[in-house]
Structures are given as C-alpha cells and as structure tokens.
Amino acid sequence: MGASWYFGIDLLAGVFVAIIFTICFYGFQKLVTMNELFDAVYDGIKVMLLPLATVIGGFMLKSVNDSLGLTQYVIETVSPYLSAQYFPALIFLVTGGLVFASASSWGTFAVAMPIILPLAEQIGVPLHLTIAAMLSASAAGSHSCFFSDSTVLSAQGSGCTSMQHATTQFPYALIGIVATTLFFIVVA
Picture 1 (cartoon, helix red, strand yellow):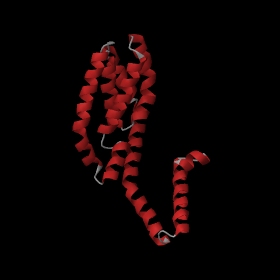
Picture 2 (cartoon, helix red, strand yellow):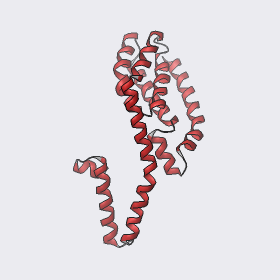
Picture 3 (cartoon, helix red, strand yellow):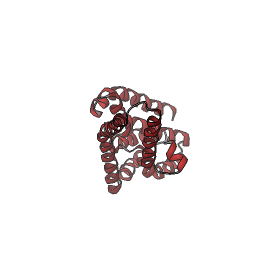
Picture 4 (tube, helix red, strand yellow):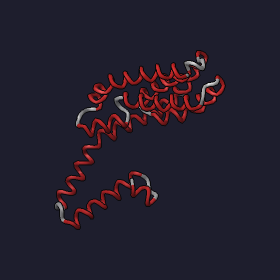
C-alpha cells in the first residue's frame, strides 16, 4: 500500500512492487534461498485465490443489485412508513439488511445516501443520527455477511471457512444489532 501511495499506482501494481522489494530485500541479505522465496510467494498467491474469488463474486452481486435498483426500491418502499422517532432505527435495519444481502457497505451508501439524507432532513431527524445509523449498518451488515470482504479475509487469516467464521460471529452481531436498534429508538 505504501508503494501504491508513494508512486501513485493502483493497489495491484503496489502488490507487485512490494513482492519485488521483498525478493530483493531477502535476496541481498541471503536470509532464504531464492527457491524458498519464490515458493513462499507462490504459496501466498494460492492461499489468497479463494478469498479473492469470493470478494469478486460479491462485487458482481453488488453490480447486479445496482442494475436492478434494489437499494432505491427498498428505501422508497419503506419511506411512507417513516417517522422522526423511528427513522434512525429503521434506516439502520434496512441499510444493514442491504449491506448483508449485497456485501457492499460503501456501494450501498453511494446509492442510498442521496435518498436517505434529504428524507431525514425533510422529517426533521438530526444529521448526526442519520449518519450514525448508516455507518452502524455498514459495520453490522458487513460483519454478519458470510461473503463480505471483511469476513472472507478474517476467515482466511484465522484458518477457517468464511461460513464457519460467519456462523460463530453472527450471535454476537445479533446482540449488537438489537442493542443498536434500541439505542436509536431511545435517542431519536
């Protein structure tokens, strides 16, 4: 990531720069043989193929959801039932559900924010509560979704499948979701 920032290149090119730097760094110090070093790079790439494929699948699903207009449809469907008291809690639940379904926390907001923020202003909900509800929904939905990038990478790092990781984390996420929903009802 440092190479991407310093040289102004994309992240994939930054990964290649980091690999080349690591090979040179280890090679000059003769800490490992070149064969061992290239085997380690190859093994690292093999380990990351499944998580990368899962994340790519999530981006494809997000693209399909965007093409269908899923986020806009859901927000427009629930808007007639909104009141200022329940708006942050409802936005938290609905947006969290969309993030869970699409595994796209930031993509969901790109589509939903132009609808949610003016609607919140119109019904008199403070801006900080609306933004807090959306950011909390991002964390809850991404943490609960078994194919989100954060779950896939956490599972890969802990040596289990993404489904195993999600099922062990979901009860804790559910407690947080219920507590956060109650919080937004009380403070609104």
